Amino acid sequence: MTDYVRYVDRPGWDDVVPIEQYENGSPLAPIFYTNEYKDVANYFRGIVKTGEKSERVLELTEHIIRLNPAHYTAWQYRYETLIAIDADLEKELKLMDELAITHLKTYQVWHHRRLLMLKIRKPIPELRFIAKTFLVDAKNYHTWSYRQWLLAYFNDEDLWAGELDFVEQLLYADIRNNSAWHHRFFTVFQSGVHDGEQDRERVLKRELIYVKQSISLVPNNASAWNYLRGVLEQNSIPFSKMITFVQPYTLPMEEQTTDLVDLDNPPPSKTAHLPCALAIEFLADVYEAEGGDSMLKATELWKSLGNEHDVAHKKYWEYRIREGLRVLQT
Image (cartoon, rainbow, N blue to C red; front, top):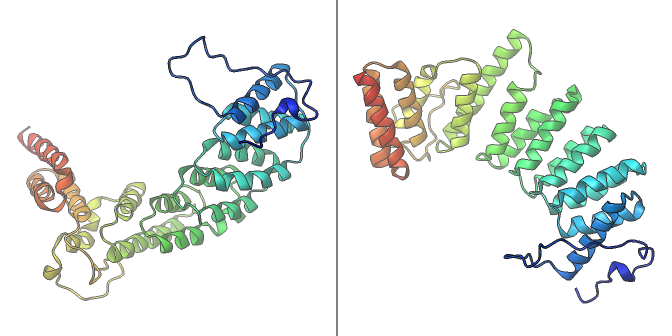
């Protein structure tokens, strides 16, 4: 930057001795930092050496973080400075709002927010802020991880109250949002909200209906099929209980035989692309679990996947066939 003012020329910094990065003589692959970054980093190393904690350190660490948001040492030193000088942490959080939106995929941004929240302890506004970030990127791992930490750490009924409605809005906007499906599972089955036996049975029925209806609208959605598997495994329900639901999705559209409305087993939509490879795989897993002669049915389904419906993973299906036949021979 041609208009950049070096720290040596800034008032109030003449007492700091900058320390250059040690390059070990002639490095084979030197990193070509900008002159601005070199200057800021040199002064940061000088500050760290003296152990100074002050308002100007916050200015310096903000500068280096804006240039390199993954600089974990600068983040840690900034947090230590905030605590040491008893800074306004809510003011800091507002600054972090801007940086989080700009650097959503940077882990250090979210770790810093977590440290701040341990002190501020006001998680509900944070949920609203996270909802805004999802308008920018609804699948960012760090954001989802932070949201789940907030919910689990503070574990307040008011926090959990609107979470299912929130995740349903995201799935309505993008039914293939795997992060949202994962969060739904976290909210429903890992939050501890539903403790009574009758309540668990009601929730289980609701979730099976929800995921089946989702599959009926968009059958070739791996996230929904994985959710179905997760619900069954979480509740120790054999996959074989789903055969009535799954079988129509393994057939071509012209072989569909019913127009009946069945909430427990909704049929594929008229616009579905069938047969569905994910349904065929599910049915094959059912037959594999049954063992015996049913293993032959599983191998036939794997053959159909490898030769026609999921050729991209042909080698994998050939492996499944070999393993299935090996089991039959033992």
